[in-house]
Length: 141
Image (spheres, rainbow, N blue to C red):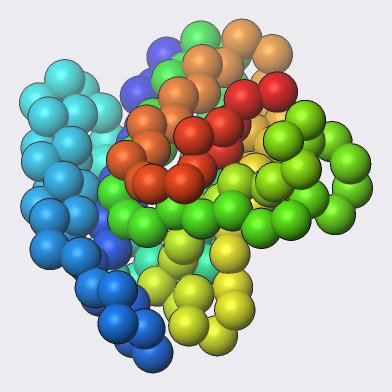
């Protein structure tokens, strides 16, 4: 039974005027806390945390896990919402996480996260801890 984690922290949002200041610290603190509990940890910090890199790292951890494994993903950065395009949201909004390259219009939407999370083997425990505004139901439903 393996324990793996991905800790994402984004302070720098180029092309926007919305930089943050504590998200990289959050990712480093989560990484240390999880490593102390026996997790193998990968981090994506600032420019490493493009949408493509986030999708790739999340997908690899989840699809590579076997029954009895635990996967923890932490995210600290901006969150957002956009109008729901497929009618699956009671509030009419898709929630999302804002990757480093959000300035070029890239958002990791809840619908995309659901697909990634749905690709795990039976018996794999997957947990996402998200510290991001405007994305409250990013994994609900």
